[in-house]
Image 1 (cartoon, one colour):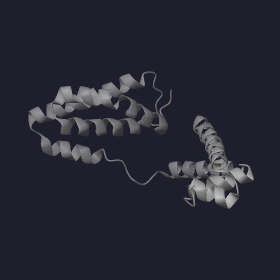
Image 2 (tube, helix red, strand yellow; image 1 turned 90 degrees about the vertical axis):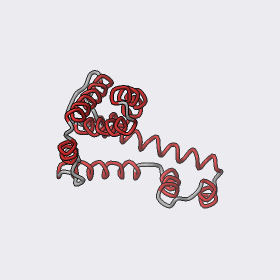
Image 3 (cartoon, one colour; image 1 turned 90 degrees about the horizontal axis):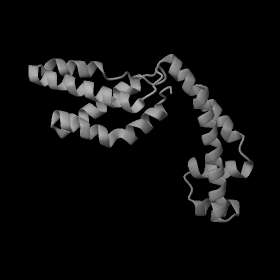
Image 4 (cartoon, rainbow, N blue to C red; image 1 turned 180 degrees about the horizontal axis):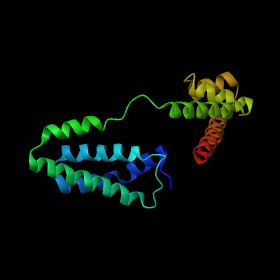
Length: 172
């Protein structure tokens, strides 16, 4: 399986409790374990869209364990200054690459096309809800339909746009 950002987020949330227990057992500090868990997530994010992984849970545990071992070695050696410098180098650049920016623009264009392809009433309900922030009651009053009708339109829009996003992710 190729790791996408969506996969990484799902993996991180699924295995977070067991990773924090493992790290806590290794470093005996809640703060250090929490920091190492975040470092694990950052390292995994670097692999997004670049690696094919057969055992993502094992990879998560391996990354976390290696980070904990490095932390313990640094702590034992008393080299806190170099740890801080290394951590600063690990901070990802907040500006996306040109390739990522182009991919994001293309993804947005396809998402807008998916919204434009919705049936008119479904599109209207969805845009009132998501863009205008209207409540179901307000949408029902504006469109002259029941609240359950609004719910059906919005659910249909979400399902169709989700399917489009899923197809886009599969194509990438």
